[in-house]
Picture 1 (cartoon, one colour):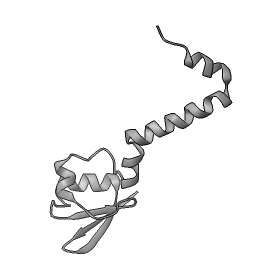
Picture 2 (cartoon, rainbow, N blue to C red; picture 1 turned 90 degrees about the vertical axis):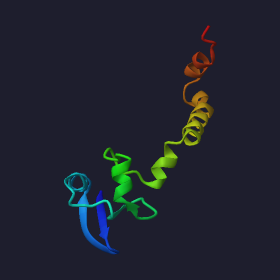
Picture 3 (tube, one colour; picture 1 turned 120 degrees about the vertical axis):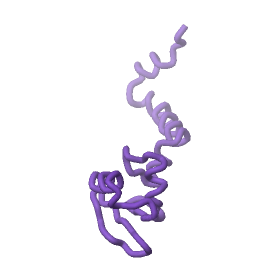
Picture 4 (cartoon, rainbow, N blue to C red; picture 1 turned 180 degrees about the vertical axis):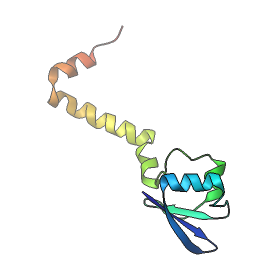
Length: 99
């Protein structure tokens, strides 16, 4: 994924994720700059990137929703609805009480 960096309202360069992180650490990309990559809805501040230590991964707005408890719970409900169709024995064993 490529990261676009803006300074003073102009896009100055495009970096890979690794190069972006390295340049933020080195000070080539300064806190007053902004960055944008695929999946974002708006430009984000490099100062916020540094402040929150977001050196693990770039997250799009959509991926945040996909990791939410409601999304995960919905997937579990769908799996539970179709489990009897996939394998009735597993459904029966899964429905037994644990104690």
